[in-house]
Structures are given as structure tokens and as C-alpha cells.
Length: 198
Ligand code: MN
Image (cartoon, rainbow, N blue to C red; front, side, top):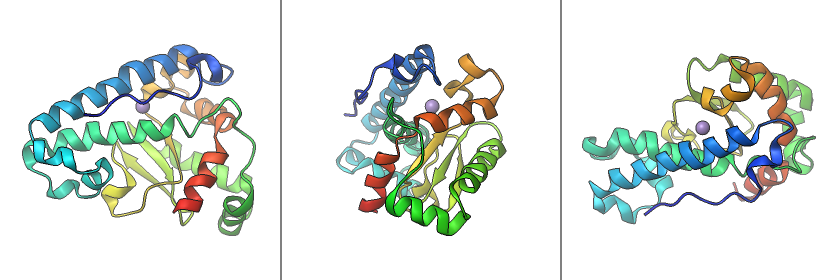
């Protein structure tokens, strides 16, 4: 049985960049719905309940067809959002340090060039999806609630939700303004933790 994970900061604490209304709706309604529908799908395939979610997502194509789409969408949604709340922080923003900074600079030349490339890929997602920074510093995108594991890749270091539900209340159709604001809340400490563990 999966549960909505509590957030480590209040819904209003990012409000300079992402409003309390969006955070509350996104966490308590959208994410809760992914959790509820994932649990419902697993009730129809109880053997899968024993397996960690990450392995279900990595093996998505081999799951029973009766629950495959539900686990892809709602399992992916639960997995992605559980990380997304941690990738933001009221103390976030600025630039990474240490190994993450060094590898970004090595791959992209400088931090701003990386931000520009990540932003460009985010704007290029047609419809709903996510943008990911991978452990090898590649920037990739996925559609809907797909994860990098569904492409046979490792779990991401950082991810950005570019579904309209993530920004429409604040930014309407201006995804570029949302992305520009989001950099101010990125939790680089969590990215560094994930990088160390990867
Ligand atoms: Mn979302």
C-alpha cells in the first residue's frame, strides 16, 4: 500500500516562485490521485505488491497487460512526484557545488550553458512530460509520467515536471516563466546526495 509522502516544507514556502495554491493542489490532489490509482492497480495484481516500485517501472514492458498502463501512469506519477518535492526547497536555488558542479562544467562548459540546455529541452516537451538530469549529466525527456528507468537508464539526479498542472495557475501558458522561476528553488543538496549514491 502506497501513501502520499509528507513534504518537508509547507505549501506556501516556495510562494515567491510557485504559489501555495499550486503546491497544495499538486501534492494533495494530483499526487494523491496517482497514489490511489496505483494502489487500485496493485489490488488487481497482488503479486506485484511485493516488488519495489522502481523495479516495476524498470520492467514495465513485462508486467501483465491488464495493469501495465495503470502502473506506468500512476506508479510513474507517484515515483516522479515523490522525488519532485525533494528537488525543491525554500533554501534552494543558486548553483551546485563539488562533483556535480565540476561534471556540469565539464559537459556543458559552464552552469549557465547547462541551464540553457535544460530549459530548451523543457520547452521542447510537447504536451505533458518531464525533463531529467541523468548521472552521466545527459539531459533527457520523457512523455507523460514515464521515468528514465523505462528507457533502461538509471534513476535521475534531478527532474522537472512540465505538465501544465505544475504551473498553469501561476504562469498560464508561459512554461518558460515557470522554468525560469523554478531554478530559484532547486535543491542542489539533494542532487548532490543522489549523485554520490549513483
Ligand atoms: Mn505533476
